[in-house]
Length: 267
Length: 266
Image (cartoon, rainbow over all chains, first blue to last red; front, side):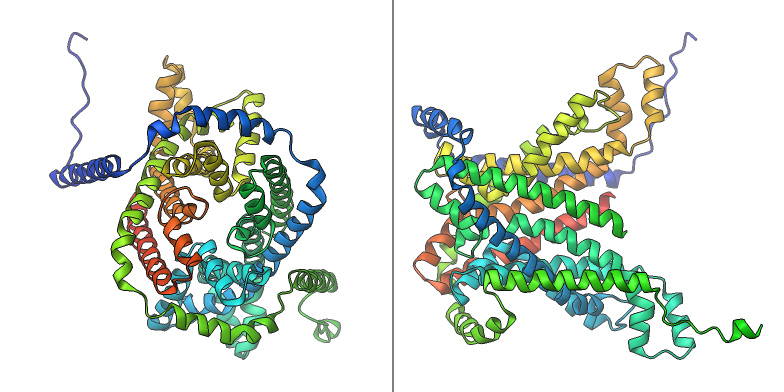
């Protein structure tokens, strides 16, 4: 064993090497651009004032305003209702759109693409931007929040639904067709039993996300607990912010647990 | 034979299933009515308010394209916030995702503790984090970056620890058996197995961060949201629609690029 054993050289094509160098340079450029053009006033951040803020604010989070619990809980329930109504509406609106997108249901590439574009377009808007638009349209009330959540969730649910529909067993449908079932019967006996559990599971999952999303909608005036956050924050009432945070954390955790349990039962 | 041939099912679904479905539907509808009353958001309202919606669409159009030049600097700030926050979050999340994977961290206390902390972090919406950090550090991009880092670490560690938990542990055993230490086990057995997923998730989190950083400015944490907020307060809707169209375009382009990159990876 005097001779050092070495592994044979890895076969590496020139092309992948160039590709990697190109990507590396691109990433480096992006970082250089980022770090040279972002203005952060460091002297402002590491100043006496920041330290004061830490001393002033952090302790207050740990002595949350318990006396506000009733009020906060009421708004939290409003948040939940907004999320629920919005998710339910989205779960229903998303179904026809999903069928439009699924290539095994609508065998028209053009229509599929239109469906995809609608869903993709909706998904590109953050909920809160939608909420801004709806607040301007229907006024600052929970209804604007419901609309924002409904439209925002449709994008994601439609996409997930269409993936579920595309993965179903088409033999069942052929069998139904062969035995003379009409379109509606195929839908009810061939497609729905296969997709409903997963549809429901995704809808519940989306509800989980929507609870989180709707808790901030109030910042732009669309109802729910976010309204309280804005007020508390503008009045520098950090005890109340702490309490609101606590309520949100507990509520979201409970909802996550319940929804996780339900989803396990479904699929 | 005669008995079998005369067998006709009452329905395709058993009675119990029907009962469960009926109860579930009733509960769902009941809750719907309750929340409709509580939020005063009946579907009818939508049709009543429809003229308003159309009227507003009229206000939004045509977009004010002369406003575009004011949008670019803030848009770039938004991108920078997302890039820096994602980068730092990715680096931070590596040790944490190892600590939150129960096949690497065999100590139950550390593992459960980490999971608990991450679960709590994930329940806090990004904008609320931004509110808190703006309170601490003052208005500006820095607060946004810190908020997004924490937000992104919460998501990334969860996704990554799940991937690490599913890896093939025989390789780590093999390296331990041949005398590799902890670091060597991680870098030669775990990293190669999870790297593609890790990069893919990082890109995914980058997409989420872009979307999140667009709205952080609403609470003063830097980026394009600040412009959006001002213009809405001034009711300068043509400018608002310019911003929204640009936001939309940026999100679509970045999702597309990152989607293509992720397809190439996994």
